Image (cartoon, rainbow, N blue to C red; front, side, top):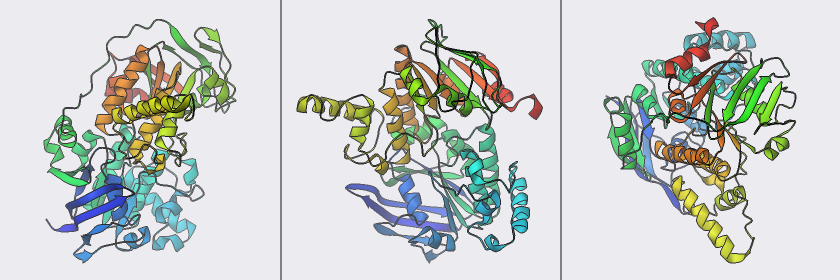
Length: 495
């Protein structure tokens, strides 16, 4: 099969860290190449160089037999290389049609022509999105799917995707895979980064593993199990999913009865969470899961509760400060609202989250605190050579680990985690699962919002399913399957 892209000896130095140490690989025409590796292995750096967002320190690249060395994303696109980065940004004021065609000659066409052409692309992709909708009105997953459709409109020959589907639900993954397969059927090539190994096994023709800046293995993922792929990546056995043991809670830590949204969308939502329990909360986009979280953390100040009790006492949550005062913590799934100042150091961020002042109680106390930070970094496999470096210089997955670690070290009574493992490699996920178990053993109650049904089944004692603003099902772990959860999420009106 003819190669579209060849990469030889690619290196990249960031500060004192050599992110790429001589990467060598090829991409054939019309194939999906999976790019695997732990957080910090250099995957996003490699994609950034290929897409013109960054420049290699040394090495060569050829595209369609010609030297390829883009200095900007526009140069890359002019050569037929398009990219969707892990933390892509969209102009919220653009319509869907304008966003799809923004870098094509169709950008100068009339609004009517753009809408008509965009509608056909959306229909072909199976997306029920109006092309006149503003991008700012879409949720993140919908924006990501529009970005994938944009790749088709731009007529790129090589498409780079970095963790596009990190928080997609099963149906969105199906839509994404269908669009990607159509791109490949048209003769394009795709390089795809994901930590969902089952997804790579389903979508990729071939995969390469990036290990500490070097391509260490080339594999045929559909011929291997997820456990076998993980062993190639981490050189050790990674514990795979097991359902939690039968749960018998001491008492109801949180009681929610008759939660209604001010806009009328949430309708009489009622549930409870026991002390030490993990309650999953899932649903399709616009099902109401994020609105429930907004009410509990005090962001939706107009939400009303018929009854709201914490530890058996009536409480009022009128603002985020009130929620914090009652011991409610929240990790957002919005890339721009992780609650981290990226210019702050890793050490300072983690120390402050644990209530440790960097100058408190003298030198010995600070040394002890820094040891705790180093232990946390080692436990979560955060890749850095300097704990005083900025959080923003970490890989996307490692930034997510720091954001999560901030909450794991607090004394929250109720912890609401919204897609906490997105963009995190399977090795670190297993460590996070252990940390969650340690928290529940101490009595912390966790509401885990997620779209990965298999992960929810692995972690949750019960799983609540939202549809169209209503809580339609609460399933015990013993009875829940991916099919029963998805059936409830889709709802009778969609069947």
